[in-house]
Image (cartoon, rainbow, N blue to C red; front, side):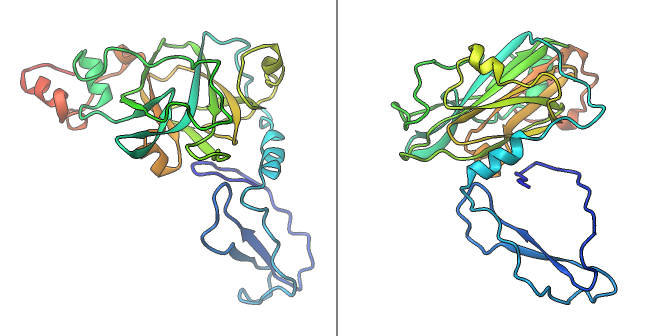
Amino acid sequence: MDIYSGDSYSVLLTTDQDPSSNYWVSIGVRGRTPKTAPALALLNYRPNRGFKLPAIAPPVTPAWNDTAHSKAFTTQIKARAGTPPPPATSDRRIELLNTQNKLDGHIKWSINNVSLVLPATPYLGSLKLGLKTALAAARPADTFGRAYDVTRPPHNPNTTTGDNVYVLRHNTTVDVVLQNANALQHNVSEVHPWHLHGHDFWVLGYGEGAYRGDAADAARLNLVNPPLRNTAVIFPYGWTALRFVADNPGVWAFHCHIEPHLHMGMGVIFAEAIDRVGKVPKEAVSCGATATALMNGDHL
């Protein structure tokens, strides 16, 4: 099983082996060069003692860069019985190009060439109070240039910064396409697990190379029984298509769940139906421009 940061599974294990022995469980690193040996645990069959070592060697986990194994496992996962199917169509498609760039000599991760920088003023307070100067007036792009070569380092390695707020209409169906690309070094494209707050999404499918949005890409999507999750992986030089319904008023982060990647700019913000959000505690927004507004008598 491949389990990425922020990921989870429920499994059933049938204990049908020879009860005179204990058994090894091996855990290996995926997607990154391992700095440690594989972790080991013991599956204890009673009445054996818990410290009784198995007679056979531990199973060998797949190589960290065996993406063929990872894709074979991930792409065969279908929806749990009883999971509702996704809406047949979407109202909006947002395409997010994941690239590695530089800003003032420092390595950053960027989405459509914008690295996320969290503002001093909380998003929810800014949007609910209509503080026009707390967030950028311009909204991030819904797509990226089709001419971008995802197999090579970026032609322009420099990035910009922004608050990356996508404003979604309430109860609309949104498709998100996560496009992976080459990093700054040649022949390097990393695995990224993306996690959405406040919602679950249907993982519609995966593809190799650049997403085109054509009939061939549409044919790769599963609209019958896609898994419903809140974390999905994008593989090197590939793309992952997601669909969710914007039915939860608020401000929600959508980001790579590898912690340093988020802090290096790999994320966006989805804001929806802010007018439907109830009273916000002052303690939650008492900083930045929101704090000034509250001192001036504005109310949330």
